[in-house]
Length: 101
Image (cartoon, rainbow, N blue to C red; front, side, top):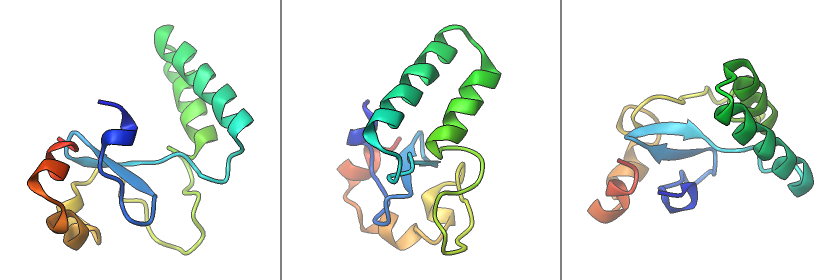
């Protein structure tokens, strides 16, 4: 399922995939740079170069330091029900939550 089909938190920081929060790409990255880094990420995945995959994910803001500046912690890898997003998650329909499983 494409990332765009997965539930996204109201603040745009995370999407839910396989039942856990995954950090979204930093929206401040310009489109040209984002496309270039995504291409590098796909090439790194195809060559099974874990270091290059991580470097691309950091460049996109999906790993490494958080891209937001309000001091909120990174809750990547946690189920939404165990985070400050619990009320949002409960408010989704069963169909919407299923898209994140």
